[in-house]
Amino acid sequence: MLALRLLRLSVLIGALIALLGTAMPAQAQGNVGRELPVCVLRDTGGMNPAELIGHPERFDCTTRQYKLGPGDFWVISRDIDQSSRPGSRLFVRFASLWQQGMAMHTLYADGLIFTQRTDARGITPWIQLGAIGEIQIERREARVERLLWHVQGSANMRGVMLGTRLVTGTESQRATIALTALYAAFGGLCLGLLVYNLALWGALRHRFQLYYCIMALGLLGYVFSSSGALAWAFPDIANNDRLRINYLLLGCTGASALIFARSFFEEQVFAGWLGRFTYVVAGALVGVGLLVFCFAPLNVQIVDAAFSTVFLLLGAVVGPTLWRAWRVRSNYLWLFAIGWGAPILTSLLRTLANFHLIEWNFWLDNSTLLSMALEALMSSLAIAYRIKLLRDERDDAIASEVMARRLADTDPLTGLLNRRAFLAQAIGRPGEQQLLIADIDHFKRVNETLGHDGGDEVLRLFARTLRHAAPPGTLVARMGGEEFAILASVDAAPEPEQLLAKLRATRMPFDLKVTASIGACTGPLTSEIDWKSLYRGADIALFEAKSAGRDRARSAHREAA
Image 1 (spheres, rainbow, N blue to C red):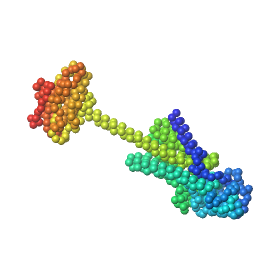
Image 2 (image 1 turned 90 degrees about the vertical axis):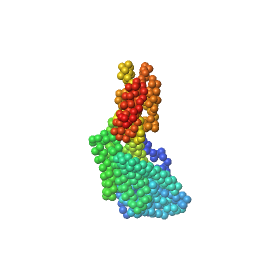
Image 3 (image 1 turned 135 degrees about the vertical axis):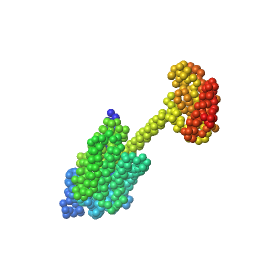
Image 4 (image 1 turned 60 degrees about the vertical axis):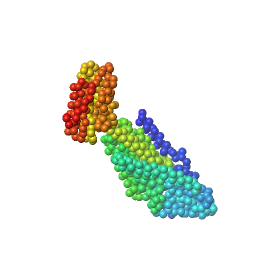
């Protein structure tokens, strides 16, 4: 049920992104101004633009443009009947498509025809943000009747002339500002995620972080090329070359997204054939991107069809990956289900548009940008979530190690240091030390009276009294049986008589009276030899206390021991 809900949510997000163009303001889409319908006529050679522009009836207005195949074409607009003056300038906007050159002829009401032509760069000088071509119509007092374009070397994969709209100068400026904000936000997001995760990789050195940085870098390059900013940065580049770079970067970005996922998910998700298939698809995406980049000038229709077909393989990887992740209960399933839903759906819709199964539109042409930005954001959240899990695992491991060490150093009954841990901390302490050896009097009788469980409780109460009575910095340990050791520096050592008084005042089970004897010895403790000498002295003093009647303390000189 959870997987089904996640799948529905991801599809919903993808659909919202794909259809967002209908809900957002026109300025944010590039679809500003009013639509300018066009009709098409194949160029058979020797045609006169002055004659064609006056006979729009010769043009085909019903056949879908892509069905006419590649070649040179004449494209004419419907009647405009609007003026382009200094106070109300007119521009014509259209989609960037694969073509060798273009000339636009403007027919004015006074019969004048004004011509504007591209050079070897194609429409690069006319490119605006959003990879939209925009030509300013020459300003004159006479009204503009209609426009005629001569498109040379059109691949006509989607159409000869798409998205044609007539806009004013104000509308053009608003569209540029809106798209600048949009692309700047995407670019800033990609750059921020790149820098953040690159810094994390430098600190943590997880391989998936580096792959994520490569994916973010590819997305940043794709934004740079698909937005048209590449043509602004390099004004001498041909528009067809910009499109080739765009294909290459899109293929590399898709491949890097797969490799990132392959390195990020748990190993069992990509076990077996799925892991190998993922590498094959990633390699195919890079390969088909290179194919378009290298061979598009020879036959762009074939390489474009190959690119669209290979991109469909992304879905063939994502579906089994999410299924496997659900089967193995991956911690990252929901993040990737949301992050991948939009790119897969939008790539499917774009592929359907490439194969002419649905209509082209501006927002669909730019949907990959939005969906991949969402994927980058969700993937970054997934990285943060995984780092949290790694941190939790580390903290648990540290806590387990600390607990294991504590158990190894602690007497399980009393919670005091055991003999090994006591000696490890005692030997080597600087300065004069006082060692007290405390032994419960007649403990065998206590066990016989209370039983072993009662005897254990007496030992716990005895240990707690010693621990509470000892000053800070004092080592308290159970040396074995009913014998305890208290070690402190001479200037902060507890008084044996005060310890005995507190032990007498401790309430024992069934109000049994329990006493102890203490032997004390003072001296340095810098080596194991010092320890043996100090312990022997305290043990002699303890023997004297017991011989004198118990429930008392005695001291011995280290030299005598």
